[in-house]
Length: 159
Image (cartoon, rainbow, N blue to C red; front, side):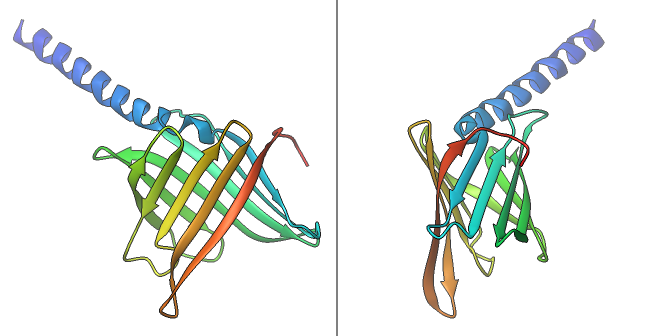
């Protein structure tokens, strides 16, 4: 009887933890899909895509192509740890960097890592269903710097 009760308690706690992680990821479900930024001269394109929450995580990918050549790429794992969203970035040619959520709403999310060189802050803010402003910011040579990525939603396809 005690064993059955202990097992039931573990199942309930495990389910509650999974539901808490899922609901935390669900709060940024609006990121899911494909986003694109085309430079005014059309020689550079930045794409970012996010998969739906699954297995306590969301996977993201971004790439920058200039004059038809890949110049940067990054894979991202978004997961829940100790009640916070964790943004784990794996950028091309650089070590992995981890940022913790400091603000989450139904329209925006901000991640920070004050010990990272640049960026120290990563943010996303949706504008309706078809626009997304992403940004990175932090000091560079002692001066504040912010780079914005005003994306628009695109159909996920093979290019």
